[in-house]
Amino acid sequence: MKEVLKLEDCSIDEIRNLIGNHEENLGILEDAFMTEIILRGDEILLCDNEDKIGLIKKVIEALIRLVKKGKEISKRDVLYALKLIETDNVKVMDDLYSIKIARTIHGKVIYPKTLGQKEYYQALMKNDVVFGIGPAGTGKTYLAVVFAIRALKNNEVKKIILTRPAVEAGENLGFLPGDLKEKVDPYLRPLYDALYDMLGVEQTERLIEKGIVEIAPLAYMRGRTLEDAYVILDEAQNTTDAQMKMFLTRLGLQSKMIITGDVTQIDLPRGVMSGLHRAMSILKGVKGIRFVYMSALDVVRHPVVQRIIERYDENEKREV
Image (cartoon, rainbow, N blue to C red):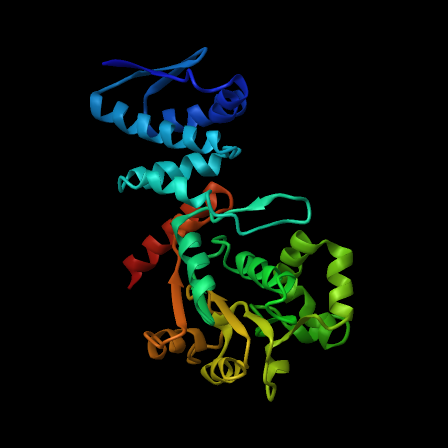
């Protein structure tokens, strides 16, 4: 069976955006469906059985709608569309890119890129305490910092507090040079990177000097009441039960908390319960608290990362 998909309403630039450099986006579709897709001017020729052609058309039409909205199509978009087509849910991509969360220092618009990120966004809009739980690369930490900065710019809070437990993931802090801050800073690097992306290095450093942005180990939170603040706890899977309770009870008036973590990467000593695990079991259903669970499908790093996570998950299930 042959069918022609016409691109009459697309400009030359839009067609180039759709197909990618050297037609790499079409190549991804060809590999996924094990078929041949031929571009001829403003037409795409599909040659295969009816069912397969129908799926390919749905993916391409979804990508065309994004192109028409001005979205630069990446490999990640094509791969995500292919994942969504498996559940006949590809049309949701239209909604993802209609939500503009913020802009980086360079003017790049930040959108929720997956269904999990969209759910995370909605949870952050409506709740005072949000747990973002999922594997590396799902944007948990980055989006948390983006929301905190947006709240600061909108005068919703007066300061941002970013913290992590200083757990030594197979390494020894004592052998690192410098004082405690200098020893811990490398573990807070993902938080710095997100701040630099949103504010630039100079403005970030100014806000840190003024105390408007505070980056500190979790131990520094003890005994404080955090008011008029956006508070982010990153790598929460490495908190103990006592540390998690201590942190959550610091919440003051006009404040919000985001707790992010990956329960598959716990670096605590054997036999020590993760505070994140404990919170997941006892705080479920508490008013004002929302848990958002992301999966390998929400990974927005290199496509291979998603496949790595899926393979490890499969292996762990076999070993249980």
